[in-house]
Length: 427
Ligand SMILES: Cc1ncc(COP(=O)(O)O)c(C=O)c1O
Image 1 (spheres, rainbow, N blue to C red):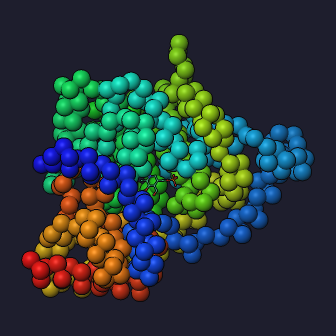
Image 2 (image 1 turned 120 degrees about the horizontal axis):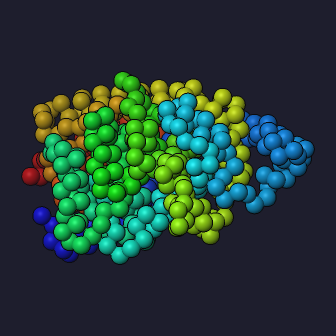
Image 3 (image 1 turned 90 degrees about the vertical axis):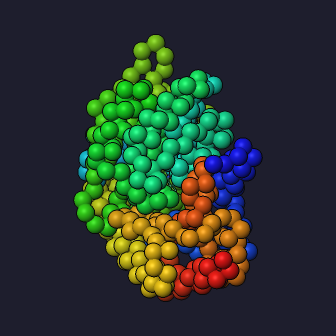
């Protein structure tokens, strides 16, 4: 159980996690990094993608009755706040995700992060409105909650606890303290940081619970397309019959992060206004004051790629998915051989997709250990405490396997093994 002071220190540590990561990367530039979940650069092909932009500009121009030249001019102008490529995204959602969402119900944002940042104050407008998020959770939602001074109430999936029971308890806890849970933030597919996937039962029960409680689910799905084995489960958005799920998408991992193109897809129930502005209307209005519109040049690159690929990125991501699968396998094999000597003292999960896996260690691995590991052994990893709201995850670390070579994986895991050995010997 954490004391109040510890809770505050941990909150600051979570908010500083990205700076910490940048700082140790700068301090130990030769260290092997399993710390950041960057997509593999070997699949970036910006030159070729940009070559496709004229075809997009031509389509864009001809739809507006413009010449190619004026199509380009109009791309270079200020654009529609809600986005330029909504029809292509809508088609891609149908083909790749089985999601039915009208183009008019999509708002294109500067990455998924902007969608989160705009939606939280809209969905949690009053004092006492709280966000529910799993402990551990992606740092981006922690930062957004802190920025808007919205309280974030964590629930746990650790130790075999049922997610629905844990959520119900947290919602009740909020209520008895005079607070209202308004938003539930989730990464149901290949979660960051845990790599976990929510089962179909969990997805449907969570939707039922949230619909009953008037809670909006923010379904964040950057990694769903990187599925290594088995069949993908339906998104929560496509399972939702109540209009309580907003789907957040991004092209940061499937194409490249520099584009800063993501989107929010809203259910019809949140798009129709009665007396007040709808959530869609509020989102659009907020965006018009924050970033005016998402860069049309960046949208044109995404649009060109979608046009070229018949509005499906399945084939486009297939080589990268194979690469990430190979990296995961290499990391699992390296962990098995490195830690064979310590029996079940060190264990790890085997994610079925995404960029991350979790290692459980027999000692606390916090900021100080991350520093020592980088300094003395030349390997960077992320303590799970950076993503957690309690001390349940102090013995765990996140390893990202997305942007490293097999040699670096083998070498980096061996280095981690030497760090673990020194810690075990010192006990
Ligand atoms: C779970 C999750 N959501 C959102 C993002 C950010 O996405 P974007 O680059 O579209 O802002 C990330 C990036 O790592 C992520 O892991």
